[in-house]
Image (cartoon, rainbow, N blue to C red; front, top):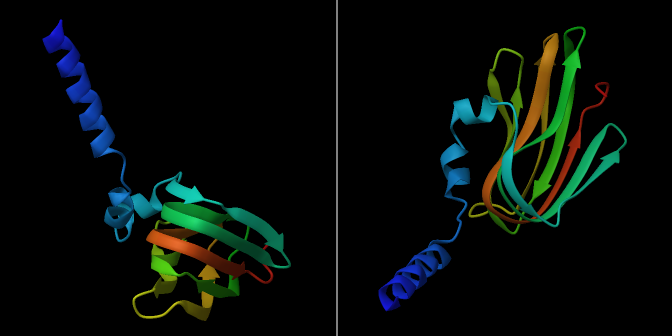
Length: 153
C-alpha cells in the first residue's frame, strides 16, 4: 500500500512540475500549415475586442498562439489599405493576411526586443472568396492592437 501511495504521489508531482507551456506558439509562428489551418489555438488573458469604425481594437494582458481577428467571404475582388497599430511590452507578434488559396502575407510584425510599437499601412488585394487576418505571437504581454479595413466590412 505504501508503494502504491508513493507511486501516485510521484505521478502527481510529475504532472504538477511539468505543467503546461506555450512552446507550441513559438513553433507555430512561422509554420504555414498551422497559420492557414481553420480554427485558432491560443492562450489569452484579459482580452477585450471592440468594434471601431472600419475595424477592430484589441487589448490583452497576455497572448500566445494564433487568433483570427477578421474573416470574410467576399463576393468580388477588393483592394484596400489595411491600417495597423500595435504595441506590446514583451514578446514577438505579427498580423498575417491569408487569402482563399492559402497564400500568407505578413502585414505587420513586432519584436519587442527591437521596438515596443509599430504603425503600418499595407495595400492588400483580396480575391473573391474567404479571406482572413490572424494575430500570431508568443510571450506577448500588454498588447494593444488596432486593425482598420476601410471599405471592407
